[in-house]
Length: 93
Image: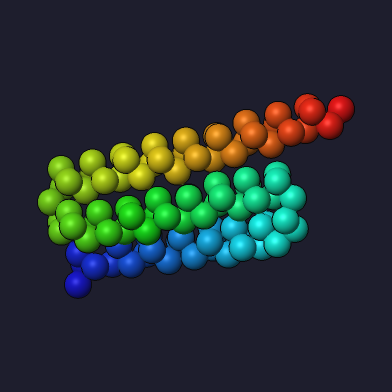
């Protein structure tokens, strides 16, 4: 039971990111579509991380590896989104 709790919780945290992706993408402008894509990729990374944690099955080395990869992927996507928003803001001025 404990081996299923972490993947379940991680998968649950992906749903708000997926909801934000749909909400942001409603506008239809290129910037909002790009931002929605970033949010959807963050959700996908979290879903893949949940599958990876399930695969790890309590093995601490595998769990640390999956957690590290998810940490890097989500933060890289967040930084990429922030850089894109900053560039778009600079272009408007």
